[in-house]
Image (cartoon, rainbow, N blue to C red; front, side):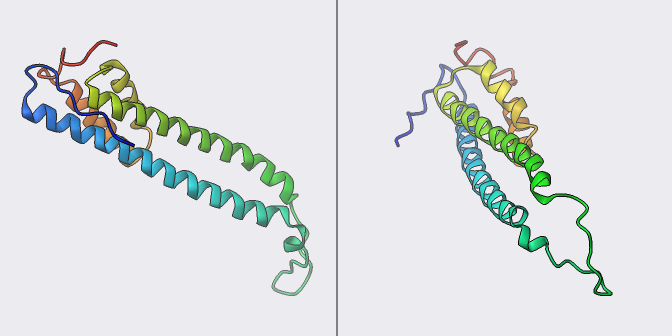
Length: 153
């Protein structure tokens, strides 16, 4: 997949061009980190569903004296609540990956400054790397030398 060429706005300094290029690269890196996070989440879900869905694991539980321990909850019902957690976190990761991918391309095209600022704020929630990327994106895009250099679309 070929990336579009970096197009620069007129009269942008070399420092601004370099910073925008670096920001676009780091947005693509965030997409890669998000993909790794989704793979880990899927692995975690499969592992936990195996543990909680197998009733034989929960049989024959004994305390230190060898007495049977009653199960305080039904593991399958307990895990049913966690499915919503996995779904919510997975959707958050997918949305984060999509907006960062779009932002990376928009930075290379010098377009959509308002959208890029929105994505920067959204990234600040993704601690720690997203927070750093969001703060640096806001710092670069709100410079006086950067105002008016992006298309308004």
